[in-house]
Image 1: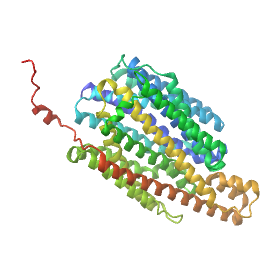
Image 2: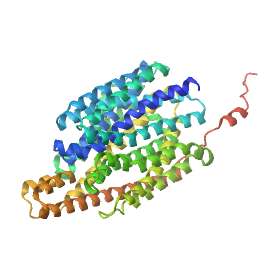
Image 3: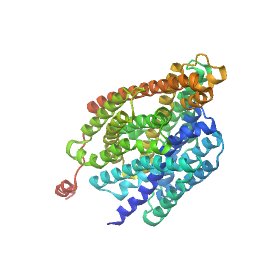
Length: 510
């Protein structure tokens, strides 16, 4: 096996770290909510602090890799991620957990785009690059189901902070593999990191996410919420204007003029919107409503991850035969169907029905995400791989952040509106409305009669909120499928055999 495939192993180890972290936290949120007293909004911040910082730092991270060496900055990102994990492991309150997640977001921002940026230089042939993207995507996907299983086992035997400790050996493996196997690549002529643009990105995204998360409690018409939403739009608008006027912009808007890159980026963003929202809501349903522990929850998320890995494995062959437009459209339709099926869930359904629609959803995720990511990366010029992949991943992570914030807020609003707290003391009613986990804790204190009715109402309210979220996801995926089918160029990748038979160009001067 050539060195480049061994080098791919270094990227796989790095992506596994990110996969572990995402799902370990989601499975642990119900436990952390109970032990730290975290409200639904605080749980959203524990998830979104990572994603918002991740998205804000993605563009400068790609440029830092271009200028100072992608391997060097990838190793730096792993080190920062390790530091954040250690802070999280030692935290004893919600604020510290949120801060640790923000530090980990900085590390993740360096890991993700640079792991993707080196692929075009390692694998020039379209078929090899498609296969490499599939392997990296599968590695990230593999971390998703393994994270909850390992995290669930840790939560059953140790304190919740141990979910951060699991990152330590994985980061050590990733750093070692990168140093020994990954070649150094860079582009010293790339644009410099613009501190003002970075600040505008972080402030704009942070303001928007804050408003979306806090709106269910304060109301969408609250002056603070309206002001924060307006400020977020203004800040993002100022960022776009600044970058359009820059001679060498950090946010290279010209890349979006390529219709293929733009639509594939938006497709990947939509898929991440749905996935992030689902991964935030599903573990709570499995634990609080269906009564599984953390380890059982991780195991029961395997159908979705299995479908995703299967789709990642076979997507390249299907794209080669039918072109990316057909495969991505089909993936989005499958995703829409699975979300619609999931929206039929009732409080009386057992796990079997959930496993069914999760399996189908995993296939939809894989067949939409992998071809879209590969086509977007393939459209990038080689000398702009870092900044281009940074733009791609920034937009994708914005989708994740908005997915957690918007879908989480929709869920929280539905839950609080449907929960029956009639006859409860004011303090108990307010506590129960914080989250379904809090409602079950209150129900245990109240006893079988009133407590039992509260627990049943909380379960029904949560399931109604989750099904509303799934219905929104189904509509979004179906609309995206229609746009992709109508507008996406169907550029089938050129195979190695086809490249070999293409005549060499004739010099015009001869």
